[in-house]
Length: 380
Figure 1 (cartoon, one colour):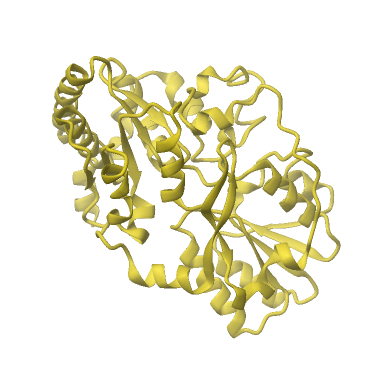
Figure 2 (cartoon, rainbow, N blue to C red):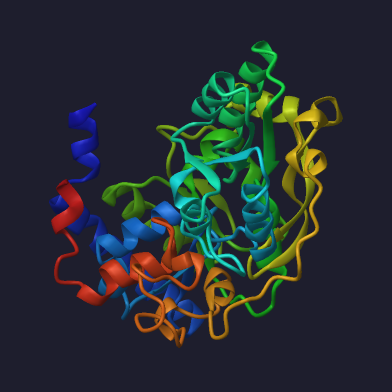
């Protein structure tokens, strides 16, 4: 496995593929009459592209934008406020992944609530939160279920375990988001000018590459499912630029060693068993029909939103924060007036500067360094 991974991180191979990327970018530019614009719809891709310096290295050939690929970043202000309100309830413990701790709501973050005496616990897996609930029957444990299709099966397994243990103190606050619906929202937004998409490899392992075919057939835009190593991303960029250059609106699978056309049936069955699509509110993109997941009727007793009904005031969005525009690819992080000044990783104003997969955090950490070290991380 190590040898296989090393081949996908080979700098010399990367340089050869980079030459292909530049050739196809030139041809795409010739066809369009301008530089082609590509959006990566995955926070892990955003970090990798920034870390390797690809964005700045290719800036005279192709414009690489970041989209709504970070699950923490797209969680709406109102939902953060609701989670914080839950954490303040007596006898309630909020269980969450670490990335959510510092995301600011209207009046603080979960980290601050914990500092003020609220019960907030960080877990690396939903199953660990179930174990915690089992060992602490004196508290009502609410798990913040944040993430795209990739994390939902693990939540399903946690529910399965909670029910097997007959827990009466474990609840789900479902803030899950689905990628195909937000892709439709982007594709119908006339202000989002993108010529092709790099699609998320992790999500595609669950739902399959066929789930994104509509991008080509309905909207006439090419897209490629991409993996996460240097060679994966460069090969996918080359494929995508070729599709743009040749005017072929197809959706290709550039991550075939892990992604199948139909995805993972077992993971899909777990999602289908416990959840159904619902309206969801996305930070910066607003309400999108059927882009979230709620618990099915048979499991509604686990729904924290029903068990702990709360009214929260209208969210207070920080003045000047452009996270919403960044998530739609309408501005680059550096174009936000707060970037690197009032908003920095150690003192974030918006979630895109908080999350490890946030575009602002990635640009701040890597893009300011220029393209000089773009290959140093390739063999790490």
